[in-house]
Image 1 (tube, protein in one colour):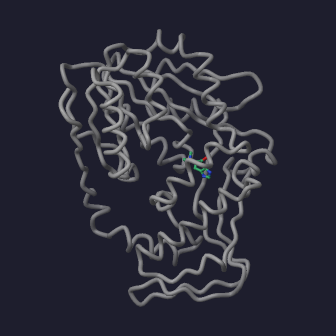
Image 2 (cartoon, rainbow, N blue to C red; image 1 turned 45 degrees about the horizontal axis):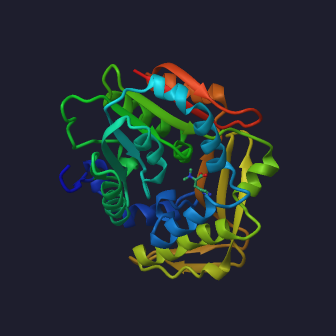
Length: 322
Ligand code: AVI
């Protein structure tokens, strides 16, 4: 294996016309006021998110591990072997290890927005699995999925999208992203997709508003990111974290609620005026039932979808072909 290669995807013209900062300023001034969830993941946000995944209230990773632990043998019979594993939103890359340990992967391609994190994960992965070739793609999935790295030796591909991250996209955008994965696939390739589903509202709200306040810190940290990106002057002490379940849309919403009336300098001569109690939306986390998840996959053009789950949980891991 050669040293990991990293390919960077450039913003497509529709996005390049407006910088990330301009986009962010515009969504803060729009109604509803919004900060796109990607801004949650600066270096501190990534550390806080990792801490969230260890929280007793945040059941998603535990349930996902239980499903994969129980059903991995059946999944391995459905998946191609000698494959390129495309790890979407790869982060620290640890979740991919079960497929590497199973010996079905010849090449690993991590896809993430955070280049520092990605290159570190590739370096660690390459050292641990010297027989596997590690490469990466730096891109923003909001631009749609592009893979500038060609298949090597026409190997089959497995797209691995764990963690229910698909739930952070609006359903139309989720379908579009899945359709783009589908478009990159050939017969014999597979998608393994994890999707959280709705459980009791109180349990869902606790998962996004934990007793130790880690999710609150994660949410409030986004204001520091915005301050850096825009040269803004948000005072995090003027906001509180809120998680609500929107039953009509079947999603958890994370809000930052202004605890007092305030004016925020957003840079570039723009000011955001907030009344006490007014909120900014920072994340939607859709909870897709089995029926809705299957519809997303079918709408994106997938076939032969198999769902894996465990008793008493609404979380699903889906294996799909084209
Ligand atoms: C990354 N994503 C799937 C998480 C979720 O559950 O929507 C992000 C998160 N937000 C608050 N807690 C976790």
